[in-house]
Length: 170
Image (cartoon, rainbow, N blue to C red; front, top):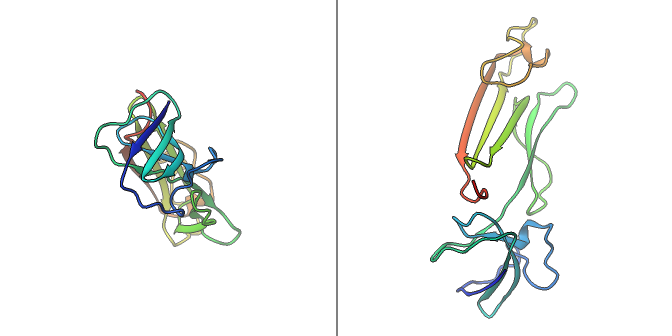
């Protein structure tokens, strides 16, 4: 399905990469129109006309706003003799790996397509290492066994949940 719509848009090459040869693998080539359930590939942007192609059967709601898709890669980096750090890389811009929070030994993202919710569970630890293990091997709210090294610290589990408007059909 190809849709042509007239918008008053100032083209910004740093945000969107439309036109011939749009790279489907790059997030800069994709947009969403909440609450439409799927993204659209931008195929052309010329003379204030935006041409998009749906990634699956979908619609664009009347008066919806265009949103650029952004994506990050998130991981925990553990280096010898250093506290573990939660790091991210902005895949959309290629920012490189950046340290965000020190003292996060693990995290678990879980997406439920039925309810369109993303739940992020984070295991964090204090800054002072004790000589003996002070935390249990299993902590309420954390799904896995905790590493012995992390058990030398005070630990906490935090859970954050949000609804994803464009998460696909329930």
